Amino acid sequence: MSKAMLRVLSADEIELVHQTSLRILAEVGVKIDSPSVLAMMEKAGASVDKAKQTARIDERMVAQALRSVPRTVNVASRGGRDIKVPDAGVQLISPDGQPPAIFDLETGKKRPSTLRDVVNLAILCDALPQVDFIWPPVIATDMPSDKSSCYEFLATMAYSSKHIQHGAISADEANFQVEVASAVLGSREELKKRPIFSDVCTPISPLRYDRGEAEALVVLSRAGIPMVQLSMGIAGQVTPVTVAGSLAIINAENLCGITISQVASPGAPNFYSSFSGVADLKTGVFLGASPEGVLMDVASAEMARRYGLPTCAGGPGNSARTLGVEAGCQSTYSLMASVLAGSDMMVGLGGLDRDGMVSYEKLVMDSEAWRWLQRLRSGIEVNDGTLAFDAIRRQGPSGVFLSDPHTLKFMRKELMIPQITAYHAPGEPDHSKDDLVEHAKKRVKDILATHKPRLFTPEEAARVGKVAEKYGILLKDGKQIFEHA
Image 1 (cartoon, rainbow, N blue to C red):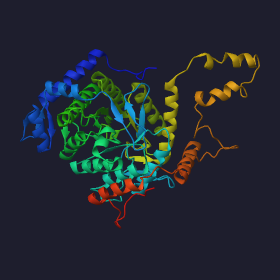
Image 2 (image 1 turned 135 degrees about the vertical axis):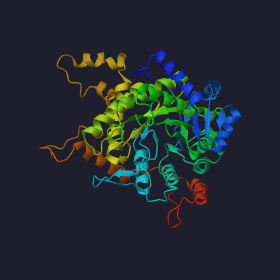
Image 3 (image 1 turned 135 degrees about the horizontal axis):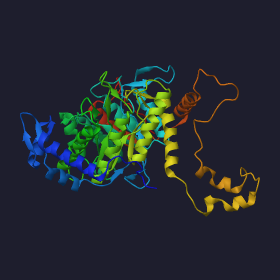
Image 4 (image 1 turned 90 degrees about the vertical axis):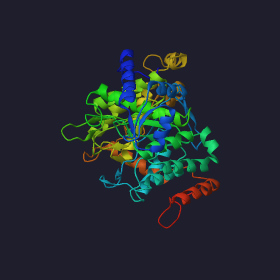
């Protein structure tokens, strides 16, 4: 079955968006707050205005970047599961990324997230087979604010063996991430062969890269780390109010990020990405999972295919502040659109409140929805075995298939057995409680009580510990933030 089943642009419209984005880069340009990155771009042929910190990037530079950027990306992990993206039938998903709040598992109220939440969520994601890679889901607000992102990266790497996706807001933070991952694998060379993490580069829309983000992009590209060129268009606020106008900005920012990456290191791996939406023009706030935002992300996946690039998109987004009907409906709509659009990687499991909060229970519930959509997308396998003629002949008219050998042979492969849905206690329901939420809570607690993630070996821990000490990523008492085997 083809991966992409939803399209919103014609071939002519795709080309028109492309040409408009080239004009934006060549005639409007982008602002890059880093003198070193501006100088690098000027040397490569960009027209630079140092006073305004802008670079105009012509079509030749973009075309060269699109020739050198790889068409596949190795999404590796310290656990040994390496996946080439894109690949037929492969779609990967992760939790939401780094809001500063958690929906408390016990009280059902919003509170600041902590390093303990970062660790618990890493363990939960490590245990859930539906989670393919992990963007640290929340911020460790109890750690020093200027280094909290390093705490989140290290804790997630230590408590899960899956691929990690993160972000870096400075060259120093990018170097920390590279050194940690190199220490895990044993060398920078091995990291370049098997990048066990990827990084998100997010321009400030419209068309601006702050110094830290631009310099981190250069450091990470040169280290061979896959870069997700994440444009976050907000129609009516930082991008034009029209979907097409926002798409032109989104596409221009992706082409710009890829060009910077390829100028820094030709052949550096990249993902084309958009997590976009609209502004509520009555209040100015961002609206998660709006139909226009979904259209932007679907159209962005089509633009990525025009360039032959792998994609990373938003997943189950929503604007809900509680685990109610709004959260379920919006998350399902937006996740289904990304699945049908054929996005290679998606982000958003567990998110609430316009990506401003993460819920343990919702992460489990979204994983169940992901299973449902993956089963739907896998379609129907039709062959002599699945057509079951022999079983039908055995049972005949009025037969019962529950005990037939055919059922035993095919049931686990054919049927998606619910994990948290369709379980209801006998008797009259307690209408004050949601059965789905209660079962999700129970699953979270069971996992946190029993799952043992693959920790660093003593040798890995010693190497990583030296990096943590070098950068000061330690607990207040000077101890390491992670356990080891």
